[in-house]
Length: 423
Image (cartoon, rainbow, N blue to C red; front, top):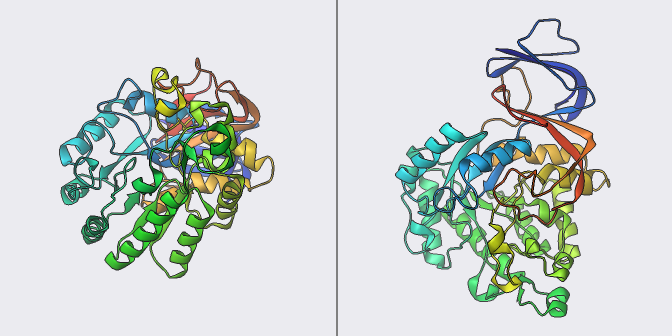
């Protein structure tokens, strides 16, 4: 089947160029000023931009075990609506994805029901309990792209060193959720002025920074590849910068919410502002934006974390941490950072496409002849209002509910097949 995208501004080598693009089967076969061939399907993208399909290396699809919050079908539909064509599923499912059978289950479900490509991240320790190394070798043979106990953190430094050494033997990246439990305690939000004003218990930035410092040292000793999830403080970024200056294979990601929100958002006790790591102060947010602009941060990841209404609509202390992120990621960052000139459009796009692909050696991330036709078509001049009725995720836990944000995803294509089309 041949598809031609006509009258578009196509993102090529960091710039938007007025071109047309032809897909034959699964791959891009022609990019030209004007394509005169006939096609089975024509997509008129006048006034819109064609970007590589977005890649999210940190998402929670809740399947198996918590499918009342999300499942692979609904989660990947939500991802496609947000312009994503590839997501990596974290292992904190029930049962935990810590063996080859669990890996194969997710792969099979994704093949049968997925609107986007789903790559599996295996658990770092058995049952993610931080007590015993998981079956990394067999999971690697089954196709995992990394290991992580995300949502939990290995507290025992000796075990963490053993995990890093074992992972390095198989060249498996280790993704950490940096949190010292003793320092974090039962904290609900960032420790600071807002926690004092609200009376909510605080989580000190040291809980994140201490583990990052420890694990960089352990990874250096083990010769392992270390990736730091959802980095959120200025001092944590300094630790990453120092590691990179020493030539260590250390990378990090930042979430959309840590780039645009601060702990001031928690003042009205909205549980959709409760996440881990918590929203930090303005100086930390600005440090994250600067690090993204400078290239110190390696990519943007959503940390898509669905929770049902009955879980989030509780007292702040009792509500779970986390928000959904697929459908708002590009729009909120384009609206709050690109349109305000805090970052360039190319910075946003690259950190959602080729840069996350590079972190975990994933396919995609660029538009070029011969590449799979994983694409998203976005009207930057339109807008999107996020409501409970039009969010495709099963869960609706987002701080941007009922807000109108600049840009609208018009189409998403995976291997040339339309997986999302705006109505």
